[in-house]
Image (tube, rainbow, N blue to C red; front, side):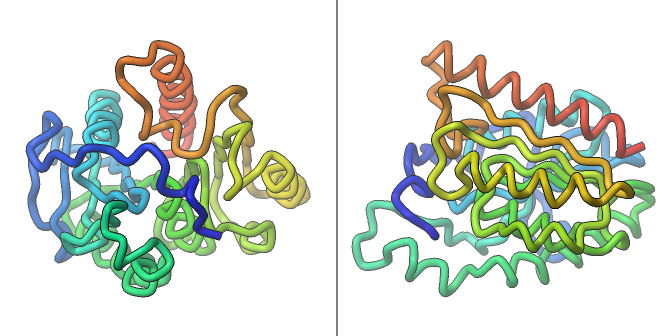
Length: 240
């Protein structure tokens, strides 16, 4: 399932990017942005390139500017996927960094946020991170709402157990979650009247477009910003 598209357009990682700072949250180094006194937190679960991706941190800052405390943990313990390492292709890297491990690591982060007085938490997952967010959303104990951006490793069956409002933002060109699969997600969710859901397929974009866009490409930036707007609307509606 992790084909070349999963890793296309790798970001240039920058540990000092963003307006926030890095601190430990639930035992993980995490990029945090926004007021630590906010009672509303958003957990961002990255793609395979991890928490030092500048566009991801920029989005965390945007979420923080909307009044949330944004937290982007390093689920890979300083070992994000490196596309230029021929000895460790994505399938080998994933053996060390499975999404089930991400789920277990996310729970102490959520506990830490709750213990500091946060009253509601939303989660946004990108590619790899979308599967982690889906697993969190199978219980109502962890998050109040979920957003998936160009998900990877997610199946229609995952949504049969889903418990919280979910928005899925997909790409027209995506081998990992093609539009036909997103339609299956939509059908399963539509049958669950107790779970609010929203599925949108963005035209003329490819897997990864919400965070792995070229800042110099006006059309790419516009599509990413449209997705960011949709994402913020969903979080504002349900994480309160």
